[in-house]
Image (tube, rainbow, N blue to C red):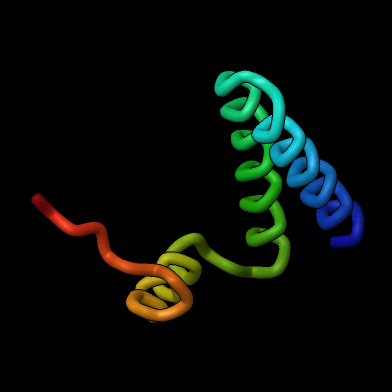
Length: 71
């Protein structure tokens, strides 16, 4: 898990750097890397994406997470 966490951290930093001064295409590429390594971490510790979605649903209306308003 240590190497997975290290790689996830590297990808997070690369995503932030891209967002601060690079093209949207570069941010997209780095975001894909970041999400991939996050999924690898989840699999390693036994978390399913549905677990995370459920947690986000539980937080709706709290922590700044709000449903999108329909026009």
